Image (cartoon, rainbow, N blue to C red):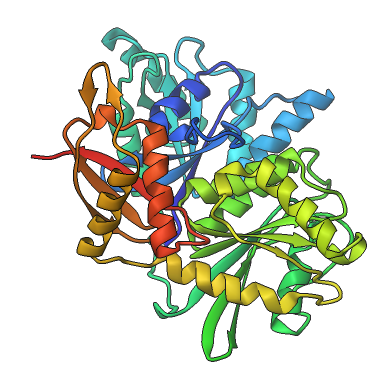
Amino acid sequence: MRKSTVAIVGRPNVGKSTIFNRLVGERISIVEDIPGVTRDRIYASGEWLTTTFNVIDTGGIEIGDEPLLVQMRHQAEVAIDEADVIIFMVNGRDGITGADEEVAKLLFKSNKPVVLAVNKVDNPEMREEIYEFYSLGFGEPFPISGTHGLGLGDLLDEVVRHFPEREQTEEDDETIRFSLIGRPNVGKSSLVNAMIGQERVIVSDIAGTTRDAVDTPFTKDGRDFVIIDTAGMRKKGKVYESTEKYSIMRALRAIERSDVVLALIDAETGIIEQDKKIAGYAHEAGKAVVIVVNKWDTVESNEKAMKEFEQKVRAHFQYLDYAPIVFLSAKTKKRIHTLLPKVLQSSENHAKRVQTNVLNEVIMDALAMNPTPTVKGQRLKVFYAAQVSVKPPTFVVFVNEPELMHFTYERFLENRIRDAFGFEGTPIKIYARKRN
């Protein structure tokens, strides 16, 4: 099931980013120990009680014709369009302003559930002053304080109440679902058509032709697959000036529903920062990943060139060192046959379990090969390990003191586990826990 999405909108300086940070907490950042993973702060994951959801932070909506104001408004409209529920934030100290009323008009047109949050209500006396906000037409206003974290529980209770009910996916558990992500015009739709052998998706040289995510089921060699093609950008009258954040939002929706993610790179234009950003979301989500270098027919496609390009990919995507790289051309279908076997292998490894006794033999051999480090006179002791979940494969290593497990030694254990059991195409997670 995909997670619901909440957009926080309002005019500038009403405290949207403060509330955003409180909702997402530490979830906003990808692991910093691994170089090359970058992401914007506009889109992150939040949690309330037992419900997880996506949160979009928007720039303040300003009404005007200046290029920056127009772009800010466009970004807010994009977020509104993506959201299942909208938190409309106003400033309790300022009362209702003309800008608030303009934002309200925009939200009425969206036909989305709107929860009105009156921020900066820092003391009980101010609660009597929020009733004027009823006139905005969104029902009961919820007084909150982003600075002090007050009132967020009641606000989130109301937000979650408006989430649409999600039905379980109809696909059988044996069906492998994979998505194609990448910047606009990298060839996602062409690759979909090439893999299924028919013109299922509109293909154009104009970036952003795909308007919505399209699920395409097909069967190959007796295995059932579903391709989730991601939209690049939706057009409404004018093309949104900033497509980058929007394409990431769309890709995240597809990533959530995928077993395997194909991260597409354009061989003709090479690797850009946007490629690393989008692939970083798949890595953070713990999905199996296959790196696909498309349009390989447009460059000098010999073995030497392939090796050199692969080295560039590895240098730029160090955090995806587990992901296989496939070179192909969706247009000419050259090497297209090499892709599905990698998808299948990555999916199987993503769901792989290993026996506890065999795992611990590998761990003990690793300890003999490279003894645990000593930190401030205290040596790390590893007692045993167990796999606790799949998708991605997750291991708990029981130790004397988890703080002694340095990142480099954790990485060493990961490499030994990979050497022993494979796991190509999938991230694996290792957690150190104190033995009871």
